[in-house]
Amino acid sequence: MRTSAFLAALGIATFLGLPAAAQDVDQVKAALKKKLPDASIDSVRKVPYAGLYEVTAGGDVLYTDANTSFLFMGSIVDLKTKENVTEARMRQVNAVKFEQLPLDSAIKIQRGNGSRKVAIFEDPHCGYCKRFERDLQGISDITVYVFLYPILSQDSIDKAKAIWCSPDRGKAWLDAMLRESFPSSDASCATPVDQNLALGRDKRINGTPTLIFENGERIPGAMPIAEFEKKLAAAKLPPTASSK
Image (cartoon, rainbow, N blue to C red):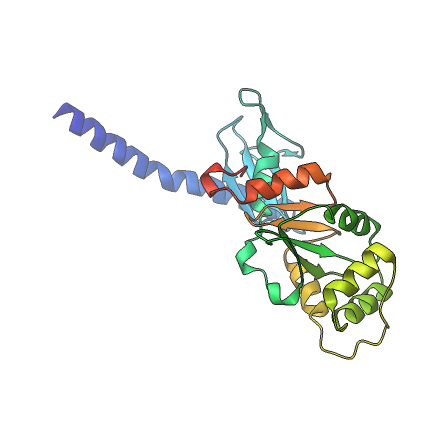
């Protein structure tokens, strides 16, 4: 009888506590918007450390106190687990559902059995993209979906459209990135370049290359090929066992 009453009381306390917590979060968010009217605040939530509130804004993760007197920018590291909790949270905030990407708007390049998949947003004049494409030549059993994302110049847009309109898009892309051999600038077909640019803006992709793995993890910028292999392997694991 006593145990049941205790559980019932705990349930009531928990139920009664929820609106107050939600109200606190709403108050913090409202105060921030008042103090930072030009900031695009996506979400606010209470986190279980240091009495802080997590604020997500434009893909960034920040922190504030209950009175919104301060805004903390930087990483929080759990000294017990040595995990950078801010970095882990940013991976969640910036994740992109791979299965929702419009893959028919990308150039598909397959090597080996193509079992491992990655999407890459790239500009044909991006030096880091070219270097990464050279490294990718040594990776087997992979399917790469190249989203033409020409953000560097008008010439990048012209080159991207010409590559898409080539008879063999994959070959034209690799010729451009590996051999500096670009096709004719006459783009005589409909291309998805404008749609890709809109998609990138919507996903807050601000630089090239930007990699998106099957588990949704997004990596801005080129990365060492050994680390890329690890990310590919982690992305194929079940969600409960992945690095996320």
